[in-house]
Length: 99
Image 1 (cartoon, rainbow, N blue to C red):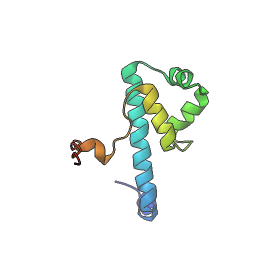
Image 2 (cartoon, rainbow, N blue to C red):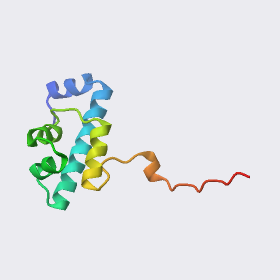
Image 3 (cartoon, rainbow, N blue to C red):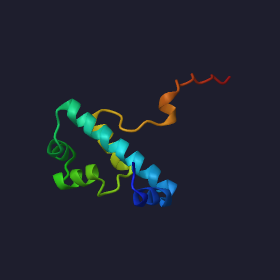
């Protein structure tokens, strides 16, 4: 059972913070999953992206905010999707020909 203090903190935490923490955690878990599947270390990723290992570590520890641009670079380098959008969940409809 959670302590009263922990329960109060959770109740007082703004919803956007709860969502942010959940999403950031999901992203970091996904990046680590891809690294493990490919047999890469954080150092390998840093070298491939021309970054310092400390910067990669900050991304994966939550000490630095990941931008969408950074996530796109990670996806391009790793060759795997990190986040999915609703358009990824639905099949693309063929375009209608005009004329």
